[in-house]
Amino acid sequence: MAEAVTQSVAKLQLDEETGEMVSKAELKKRQQKRAKKALQEKARAEKAAAGPQDKPAPKAKVEEAPIDPDAMFKQGFLEEVYKERPSEKVVTRFPPEPNGYLHIGHAKAIAVNFGFARHHGGVCYLRYDDTNPEKEEEVYFTAIKDIVEWLGFKPFKITYSSDNFQRLYDLAEKLITMEKAYVCACNDTEIKLQRGGEKGATPRYRCSHAEQPVEENLTKFRDMRDGKYKPKEVFLRMKQDITSGNPQEWDLAAYRIKTDTPHHRTGWDWKIYPTYDFTHCLCDSFEGITHSLCTTEFIMSRVSYEWLNKTLGVYEPMQREYGRLNLTGTVLSKRKILKLVEEKFVRSWDDPRLYSLIAIRRRGVPPGAILEFVNELGVTTSTTTIKIHRFEQSIRKYLEMTVPRLMMVLDPVPLVIEDAEAVDVELPFSPKDPKMGSHKVRFTPTIYIDRSDFREEDSKDFFRLAPGKTVGLLNAPYPVKATSFTKDEATGKVTEIRGVFDKETKKAKTYIQWVGTEGSRKVEARIHNALFKSEKPEDAEGGFLNDINPDSEIIYADALLESGFDEVKRRAPWPEAAGENELGKGGPESIRFQAMRVAYFAVDSDSTDDKIVLNRIVSLKEDAGKK
Image 1 (cartoon, rainbow, N blue to C red):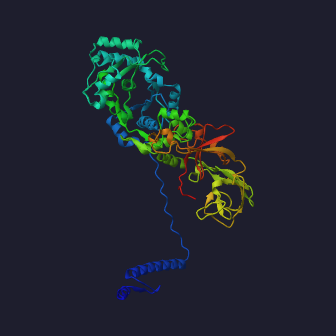
Image 2 (cartoon, rainbow, N blue to C red; image 1 turned 180 degrees about the horizontal axis):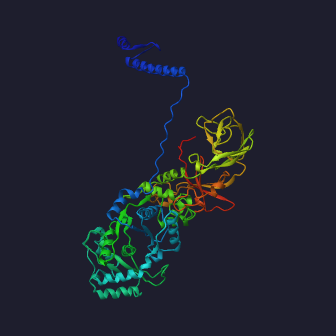
Image 3 (cartoon, one colour; image 1 turned 135 degrees about the horizontal axis):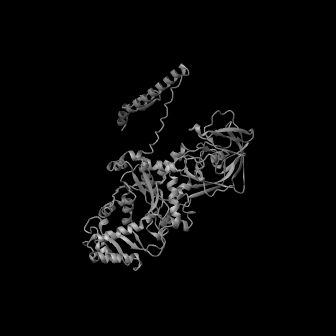
């Protein structure tokens, strides 16, 4: 045993600096570390002996190149679409159904159709596809037009599918005379069997009604028109290709009977209405559309679109399909939003927590930010599914360079600076854009800071105000040191902080915002968070209502805002872009600003002359762990 120990020690070497016996490898490691340290100390000594030297100029920050607003039309899918059918006068259309409010996905359709036409020097129609009277309301027509204009587009003409009801009817009769349409009395079960049954397990076939002579079909179709049949008793079908592998050729419906609700424009004049598959391609033809751009769920419909125009011998537009834009973490269906409104989870259809375009607008998102977001994503044939935080990231980036900055405190507590005097302070509206100008605010001996910027007991990881600690005040004459504070014994809340200027500290480690007692105003600030807790509310156990985030809205009823707000309001919109392109153009939501160290805000439509209500647009781009 002793011999083994002796041999082991013999393999060790003496570290002369510490007197320890260590292995050869460990000694080598220690010597290398000491040599490196010695070199560093030598370099520091030589630098000190040489005296102060000019520092090399810092590398200039490379500004991110602005996105070309027409980039999506100059490359990729939309460039190829134009090359496929070049035209001296491009004509497109945006054809929404007026049965609900537009959502974020429609913003892409608007940008694609109106933008494509504008880029190529053409025009775009706004056409209401109003062939379903029981689901259409005037409020939707108005809201759709307002959103298109808010996004900065002016329709060449506003048209309605109902403008063409007589013309469409005449073409339906023509189709019958060509033996390409027939009146069918089959029910849903029979039609399903004709189309292959469950999962296409049986051969497809055409019903006996397809063999009716032309005169019989014309008589029955006119009887449909004249109200001699009840709804769903019969309908007009196109005679296409039942053997095709494409379901859009399986003798689609062309006309159906609807007698429960008068049409908003034609009243009770019509008892039959054309289907989308019959109406859409023909209205495109009537309006001379060159490029009919729609989303990929209509890709199989292209065959029936082309078949009908070709069969009737009318002008043939070109339909092409791009991927739609989806947003996760929310719901967009009319039925689900109605449920949220009825059960008072949200205030209304334009509640800022929703993602209808009227809600996004009310929240304060600028129209230019939406267009930039769509352009940034680009247009392909793939569906684009985006998380909410990605959308907000794009908005934040847009706002950073386009809106002024003000000081606001959400949860104010007074700070009395015992040796301060009232003085005017000049504040820039934006440190990044001198063209925004500046404004004066009154720095007063008593100011308000945010309650979260003060702690009764200091800690190493806290860099703001605490007893005996100094913090900087944005644009104030000096940093301030807290000397004492008072509390409400009943609530335990701090009611006042007292301090003095710290004139010895040239530059504080941290700066906080403040609001003076002169010229400031009380406002209500609504902080909106995600309405749902998960990315897929529909998949929540028990349904999407069980996924509601209880903290989706936090209201600060006594927030304080500095006096510069008056000038920001007077000079709105911020920014002047898209449909808010000149002074005074835009609703209250066009009054936008960055509340420094807090968030981006816009004025809400609930505001009155006596009370300002603000919505948080998006949070600031800050580290989550910032102290």
